[in-house]
Length: 447
Image (cartoon, rainbow, N blue to C red; front, top):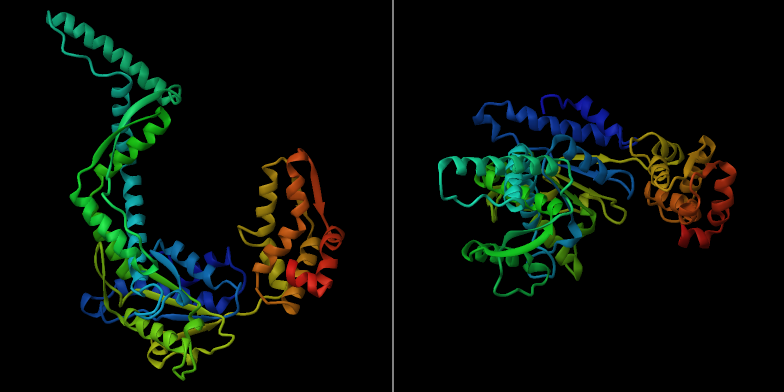
């Protein structure tokens, strides 16, 4: 976190997301403020609350991608939820507190994976010894002179070393061994609907800690057995109490919750029909965003220092249609720009994971070489921008549709064209897409 200055964060986001400087700057400052807060004296640290952000902009302009890349950059627990999936208690839908439970679960898995990597070498060594015991069972105690016993042990030691060398070289990977795996058996199952899935998981976990593990013999290859044994040994070496403690700290101090489609629960009031439920969602979201304690199976989680980033297109509603209390909890508002032809050209070529590179690499796996000329990229961007203007504006997602249609035939024929080479120029793009793009009915349904 020391090196994550706002300028560096924006530069990293620029590698994957084109444009949207204002949004990048806002999230970069919000992330840096988390580091600044950690440097404060303890008495002041609790008083500094994160400045939650609302991103306003049409679909496909990079709202979700900015939040996701930000979380990955900070190595922070991150969860994305849709506000429209939640409803107030009493209506069909998920409980809003489940987003914090999901975040805690993600954090625990993240920390557990990090700890597993730290103990991986030791776990591999233990797993190797257990595999060698399976391949060459330890010698039985020998009766007779001490000299004969030592000779027998020496022979076994030599054989074990030879097996170890073969195992490390992968020569025994296909040999079948029988290992013992331990699993928990549930005496019953729960039939649950969307609102009870957390209850089902918690009951199963509670019973799982009471019911004993049931050993089961399983025949498998040495390669698969090695992976199973490494996982078992790593689990034994990890202190789960320390994992849970670290995961809880990360959620409370670094966690990011991205609430998408916040505009779908905005209402202009009136209190009729679905508006009642929408306003109820806002009121249920309020205590979580304000700061409350949510009970999870890993312990209580305080939410006041979790960063909430909300996003919505706000076509039919405005941010001011949210209830005033919730508006006050999202003090920073950022409007994202519409994407036009110039941005599409950059999206197709500049990012590290650009679409043209993705398709080129995908088809290269079939031995087919694809080359995109600059004029073809310009034409693709022009068609995508034109269709967005005339049909529905779905932002950069239109490029996926256009490119998939352009390369549909090539993708189908690629396995039969080994060592082939195709150059995509303006003419090639026009032959396959221009007619569809011009015909409004066709472009509406195909592109």
